[in-house]
Amino acid sequence: QVMNRKGGVGKTSITANVAGVLAAAGYRVLTVDLDAQGNLGDDLGYRNVPSLNDEGMALFVSLGQNKPLKPAKNIRENLDAVPAGPST
Image (cartoon, rainbow, N blue to C red; front, side, top):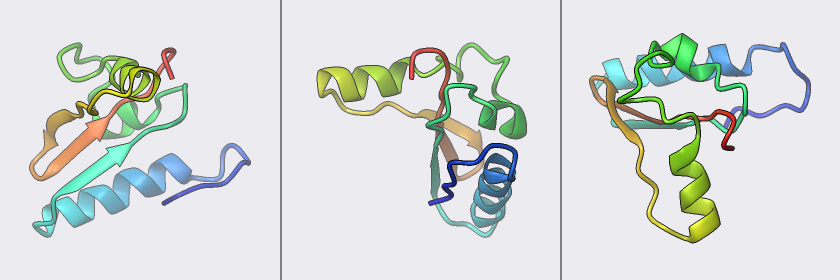
């Protein structure tokens, strides 16, 4: 977990970099962006890819309707993500 209530301290950058390194090393990685700004999508390159970025809707549906979480698959090799956005 990478958490801190203060903004601008590098949480998203640390998350993207650690996830990328672990995925490149062969680990299966799932990132879950819980920030409504959804900036992890910028760092991992999926923000402007509609097929990958649902702007937090999968997370919203999963939590609000008790349904299975559906992450965006293969953001990078071995790396999946649950995007955030206005819906979170």
